[in-house]
Image (cartoon, rainbow, N blue to C red; front, side, top):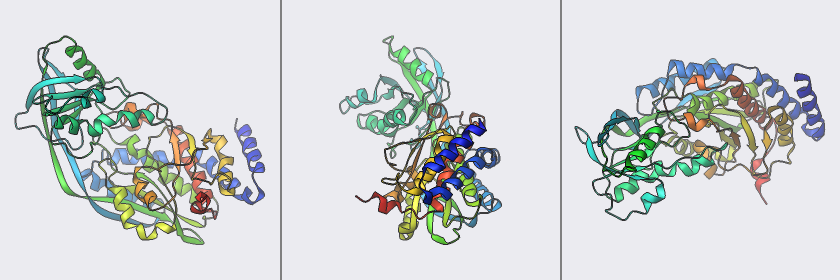
Length: 457
């Protein structure tokens, strides 16, 4: 099999223009080295074991900052630094929920980021179950006065993120819409595709002012079964949380300086923060590990590339703020940032690459395409769209982005839940991610490709 892959790679290299042959050779060499390199796995094992969950506004995030600095320095990165910023943080306290009548049972919940606390002693009220978010929106003002709204809309499993993109709406806006209609609390079926009794947390848009929590998927179905019997159902919530208006936060940065064009910078990274139920392995310890390992391999396989590769461990993606803070701090150098990208969809294989607009015919991208078949990565004709949530601010400043689409079939079974742990990551699939990123970074960093110019009509 190895011989077949090598032959295919050689054929691909031969097929690209001569000017790209050296880049294609390097891309294949980096790819092959990455597929057997344990660096990403070691980084991921380290952060989940030595730090664990990393919510913004907690001492764990400070430990994560120190871990990030030590890790980058130990791996030979230069100009390692901490970039501080402030952001609003929501910190979980005690939480419980139970059906009081007519069928007393405990419920598995996780509070949503931005939830209000219940009154001391808890909140008890009748629930109203809605099978879809639209059914909640169809209620007139005042229709839910004194009630707890429950949305049980099911998220569809998809290979990409389309299912999540539509399914996340109730979590983002449902509590606020319920409050507008008089509700005193909000519950929703977890935005997930699993069937375990582990609820999935996540952030809401703003702070709707009422207690809001995610139910495990079986418990959402349990409430549907109870409601079908036609009797009033009363639920008691007991939730506490703390809001820190200006939480100290940090992004951790390290560079591998380019040998001839150091001011031309490629920004790549993952987010260091996580939610608290699991250990933040797939969301987004894997992304931090992939980006860091890929950058190191791209810069150390053969001669140091011409351009600088900068790794950013963004410090507050889950609750927001790090991408905006990074863009604001680096707006004056945006013109010199060649490209940005973020790995933030776990550790399963990349199946598709969406390159910056207009770049597919460039020799550097043809060199990357020479490495892609050996990774079973499809090159899409659709251009990259956003690059990741932490790169949105840079993209708005005109920085080109790249999108590597991972197989998300399992991701939403796990993320934001207690199942987000190291054992869910396959080292071989993690290495395929590293190989894809590393081969791409190598050709961009050691070429003169100008994505901005190529995107012009």
